[in-house]
Amino acid sequence: MAAGLERVVVREQAPLVRAANFNEVCLGYNAEEAMAEAARCLNCKKAQCMIGCPVAIDIPTFVKQVADGDFEAAYQTIVASSSLPAVCGRVCPQEKQCEGKCIRGKKGDPVSIGKLERFVADWARENGIKPKKPEVMNGKKVAVIGSGPAGLSCAGDLAKWGYDVTIFEALHEAGGVLTYGIPEFRLPKDAVVKPEVENIKSLGVKIETDVIIGKSVTIDELMEEEGFEAVFIGSGAGLPMFMGIPGENANGVYSANEYLTRSNLMKARLSDYDTPMPNSKKCVVVGGGNVAMDAARTALRLGAETHIVYRRGEEELPARLEEVHHAKEEGIIFDLLTNPVEILTDENGWVKAVRCVRMELGEPDASGRRRPIVVPGSEFEIEADAVIMSLGTSPNPLIASTTAGLEVNKRKCIVAEAENGQTSKPGVFAGGDAVTGAATVILAMEAGRAGAKGIHEYLSNK
Image (cartoon, rainbow, N blue to C red):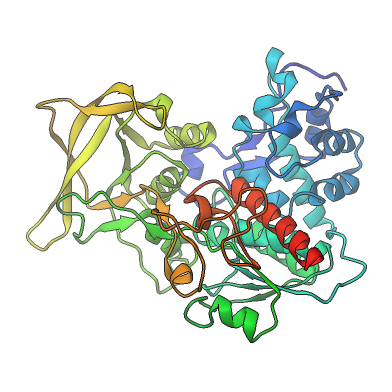
């Protein structure tokens, strides 16, 4: 197969078709397409793509195995480093990571590493291929708090090393943000998330749901009374932030967390579930990240004309380029350089409009992005009957407040060492959004792997 400069185009649902359903947008490669795309790899001696991968997948090896048609070997290569390959192949920002460093991209398109990872993981699921189980158990018990990407990644690595791992999940289904936060059209639950969780369980990991750490049981009790020798906290950051503007407590104002949880975990998008969503006709989503795109595209599919209001310009949008592109294709309206200042309500206290001001960009702020400045006399209104605030999240303080000796910073995030997840409390490790605040799935997985390594070193030396 000739290796061209242009990548093999991946098939997708047409924009107007997918905007009316919750089926997955990207349809992925078939075997022939995957092999053709993998053949474009230059097999660099010093592979830059691996430098860009937070979980250090042996990318050149698995891509070569795909090109050779050895998909099972490619899967085992990937899962040696990643516990969630079907997830990462769909939601990782590859353009800023592995693909962003691909040498092929200097003259032509980078190799579609993410789409190849997705193909391999899907092929393995369809053919009943599982990660290899540990040959010997070491008898040491470890508790993992939270079954999101950080917790699953940590548990997966520890299980491969022979540890007796139990994950404690506060909600009634495992998966964390993969289950409640990311919409079905980006990450199918039954076809992708649940099988990935089952793969973790196949390694011997136990998952207990409906357990709220700090309420059902404390970390101290897990360690002192239930025999867990180490604990990893991967509880995420589920506490939503708001702007504090007038009208924000009105009926019809939601956090993106609540809105997406009701649609995804509680199945409110389905008519046969008794978890109704608002019948919105005009919705405003405030924010410019991936979660804002998810909320806006969900609202669109539920029948609303949807606006994204963001106070900076398009170049500053923090969302993935692919998600912005898909949102535009589907008909989301982008009101950029715009900031809400008040939510207006009707006589019954329901949202009727959002009062906004125009912005312009000034000098860079502490984040390195140009600071948005209000344009005087630029007020205007956007008619709306629902507003979704997608401004970020912070960790729930419950775990820290019920664990003796656990240090948190001024943002209420748990303080932990980046290289191994060690906290101020001996035997307790942490990583992911609970430590950094809201970030990406792959960075949470990187932190989970670091935490697993830290626990392994701690218990080996104990």
